[in-house]
Length: 325
Image (cartoon, rainbow, N blue to C red; front, side, top):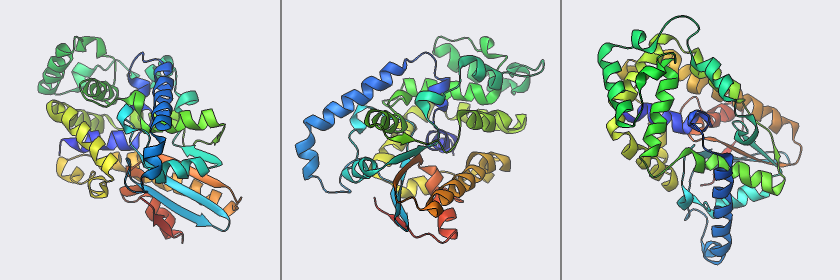
């Protein structure tokens, strides 16, 4: 139950940890991509001998419409240098693409700190301490103190934003981080290779989802995150391993238990359902145009595995979606 929120955020929201995570320089991301490229070159002979499906990073599908091919790659919005290069099937699908479609282009579209503050802070005189149950606030204060932070400085921020800060603290104690995310890896490669990048969403849309939840829902999810904090780093690493291994069962069941946990229905409807339907409609339009080009879509894995998913929406529209890897 405790890992539900963590799983959904790192498989559904591109850029939230990156945008909220503080002062990491974009150059670090570029260095990660350069190191990955160097590793790929030096290990090329070994990789070429690998058969598809024996590498790293599962969750690749393919759909065709006339002369148009579209690859659908489920990602994780975290990573480390050991992730790369990915499985040959994934790398080959990416290399063949004329156009890549991320959730949004993290390299160019991340909101400024001022814009994030406008989403994150209360619009009235409310405070975090007033909104949270006393026990939750005290537990959260202890976590912040352990990390050399003062929760009182966060009193003007809404629970959803504090939850993102909590997840960033978790990544700092794990062996994965948002600056080595799979999305950034693909975006760096696309930029270097001069591929056209077309976003399916915008950063603003993602932050509007998070800041648009009712206060009740925000408090519910932050309470669960606080409750599961001690085990969160280990669980995060386990989720990264599941992604690398292509463990589709782990992905399909990650949203189980929300009703049991008492989370409001609006949470999954906004986080997953509506976004998947909108993205599937956008992909349908591209497929119907039948430009004869190759597209590589990369979004959080849960968008392809948690129903209503992009996969099921496309299938409902009559497309045959092949699970490649």
